[in-house]
Image 1 (tube, rainbow, N blue to C red):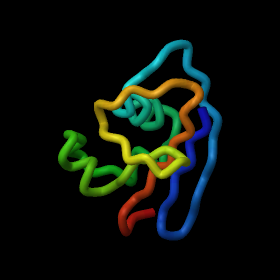
Image 2: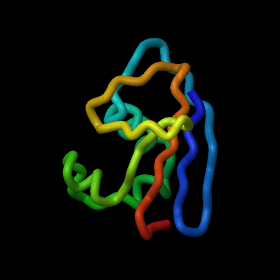
Image 3: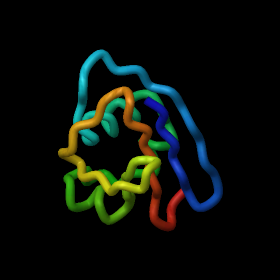
Image 4: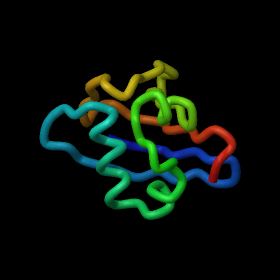
Length: 85
């Protein structure tokens, strides 16, 4: 899976390989543990409604994804921060 994180001033792409399908929320949790600036960019309240106000997540085919949607290694994600980073 390729994940690209977009901010207002920077973008970063990384490869993540999963052994099974995961929810988008689980992918975000993985990113929180391995990526320090991603952790700092998110508000302390990380419930679904708060996350949806600060970022949008979609596939590279421009399909919007929700926190509870399931993705596989074949899915390429784009995470867009709104007015942050």
